[in-house]
Image (tube, rainbow, N blue to C red; front, side, top):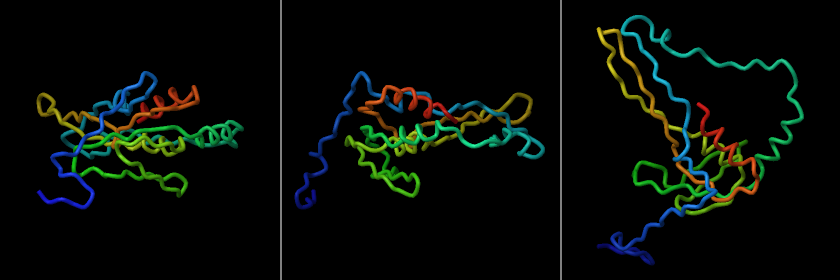
Length: 172
């Protein structure tokens, strides 16, 4: 087996076990997104089967809570992005917030700002399976959503952090 300088042969490499802690929030253990099946008609425009667009109209200035939220998002927390056995997955996931990039090393704990963890939590992949409806009435598309980069929050000093993360993970 070929050897690289200062590295072990592949057969001797050790894997790092994921440590379990009581107060950790593991993205894989949370409900991700709000999947609901939708019926696709067998005839007519597909647009009629889609959900209506969600548009929020802003009719007044943003209140003072925004400054508190921005301060909350700048707090540092410790996360661990899980290793992946899929060779097509990014070995070093990168996310961006306000034009600033943050790289995550899989399998290593890192202390980063909460705003980057939010981007990780919102990075989701949805796949669909189809089930044919009786009497050739069309197909039911059943979504399956999971995090693109599963992670665990190892340390968050803010008591609101756990509920905040669960809320972000549950959003569609």
